[in-house]
Image 1: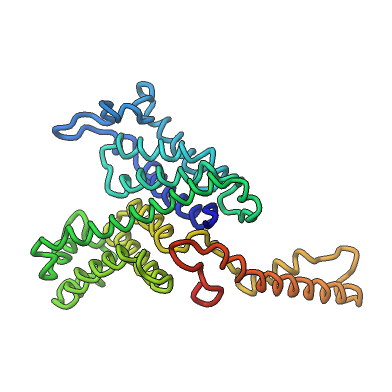
Image 2 (image 1 turned 45 degrees about the vertical axis):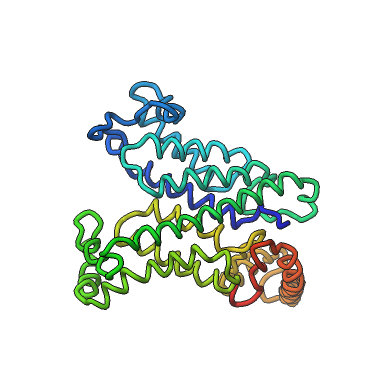
Length: 350
């Protein structure tokens, strides 16, 4: 069973937290909490919604509570102590979805995913969710590993059903079947393209082929992501790229940034191999600058023979360490393969 505590699930937690954080930080208290026709003043503190943090806030304390939630989400997004921040993250997500007047699908998705990821985070022994946990450190935590992997698998199943329902629910509508739905969305005053993008979007909307592609391509992406758990990993990488581009396009076109971040966070868990790690490679120029800065010897002036030899030895040591790490990588990744398929290949595809 793969160890679930990797920076992959950490990235998903960060994206979910940033989506909710943006809603709270860039929306005023008067916008978030206001009367809604037929429902009353928000927050509505009835039934289970009374457990939300905004219902526990004192009178005239919504603004202070909102910024307290922003602070909690900043800590979650940083990755510090995931086992301590798992339940606060789920609580804040629930409070935002149930307590604000402008909640959307992204807030609902965040509640579900943050609650499922809490199963993984509660057993995470790391100080930061960006760190790599040695395999021997997880051998004595079999129950926590099982619970954490179960949380990730449930997130995958949830995302698969979400995309399946999103695609199938559109098909009975004539506008989606005949390829004209995006014409209406593109000309919507609320969700149409912003002014700077209209010169690029309007010619596409004026073309029958362009409108049909804008309408049907998202359906193909959604049904592909719904079936991604049944596909080989190489196809999941391609669907992941298509899904990220799709949701970023929605964010740019319609302004639904919190929704996009929530969905991309779910895509990270859905499409990336269980137990895999993301490795960030700095550009050669940046690594060279960092290496020169780290090997500077104050007692050896530049240009001396000793300084030159010292730099040559340090460069050789760095190369040997890099080669040794490269040789170990395939073994580490092969051992982290889970039931979802092989881990990310150690090549250009990864």
